[in-house]
Length: 76
Image (cartoon, rainbow, N blue to C red; front, side, top):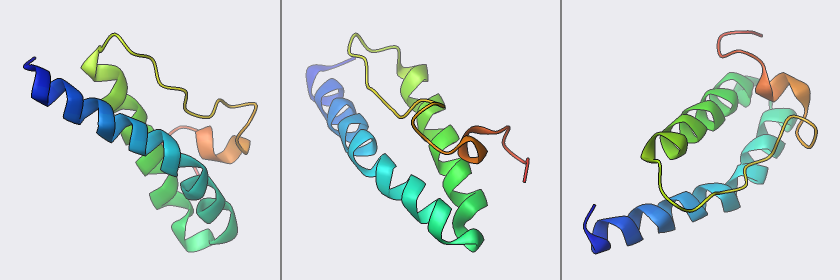
């Protein structure tokens, strides 16, 4: 991956990590956003993991985020 692309991808992933707590909070606070928030977190996590970059990002784990958020996509 070219250096510029790698840098951009890294910045995007860091932004995802920073905004994740806000997505979790909104999913808890607004029932209508729950499914969307859950799918966003799963999609972001899958995307970041698929990049197989050398850096590791720390997204919330099941023990730090309300359990319903980390259920199977499609579960209510």
